[in-house]
Image (cartoon, rainbow, N blue to C red; front, top):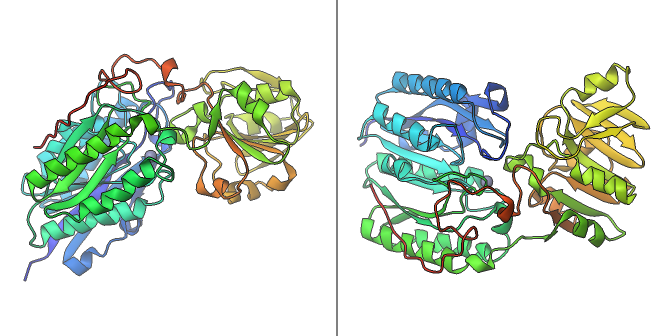
Length: 464
Ligand SMILES: [Zn+2]
């Protein structure tokens, strides 16, 4: 009969392009706490005689660097709440792994290490990561359980929380204490080149479930890493939670080797090309362009007007742009002082600045929907993606009325994919450019495929 155990839940999650000039501060983060946080994790801890205490979980849309003062303040708040919750038998941390804070080399490692200092070595720390996160020795040295998403686009967020929570509950209720081993892999590409819905990643990720079944292995992971971090920590990695270190190390080396050997097969999951090429490829029927270099869900700024400029120049009509970030636009148009407005680079994301005089416009949900030369443009007060049918219908927009939809996105969301329209990845400029040869590469480890072309790799499996 085990006595009641106590755990805390919380964390911080964001993805930061080091190529964006925008800083993330308090207003960019959504703070989830209390019963909402417990419901988010949705694991029946009480069935295991575990009391779960929610702290808070800060989550933002990917963007630029996190403001250092905000980071320190938030970490301090978290640690204070953690102290108040002690003594603790376990902690479940929800993280992403691609946070960037200027002058802090490894923010997730910094956060997790601070948690470890407070809870002590007896406490079991489980972390959940996005597979587009970067792993470091400092992270691994301070945790006992690691579970990351196995799908991209991510449809297994809940399932990942469940895996980590299950291992944590097992560790606290009598089974042996796990540990985590990892190996960096010198490969760093985008999520668009490593979708788990197409090969080679489809098979690789499916295989992880087999590895989980091995004796002494609890949870196997392949981290693609976050390519738009020009940092030392940026890398792909194999990460294994195990109760048998030797089995863990062997499995980790196998996963690392499997990904390394497939590196030349990693490619975009849709037709891709420079903007001009993509516009030349468009069919007469409805199609979708992903303006990938300015994709806010990967850390792009979302305010660029390069594609709009090119579409206007080409005289393409019946096009819908959803959306372009243009803070202040609603008030500007509502004041009706001016009937022309400037769009593009309003947040410093770069690209052309266009002056437009719309034929008509209306406002809804913090957006101005304007029509100019047969092109409908959704101008948004906030940086935001358009991924769901409801994002369009909420604005009174019927996609059937258009020949072309331009979204700021990388791979398309499952709902947009389900439209089964021909889709194209435009390799546009921006803070998350998919043309890696155009990216500054000052701090990443070398050699790193495809920035360089290493030819040999032997997994260097590390542990605590
Ligand atoms: Zn991700």
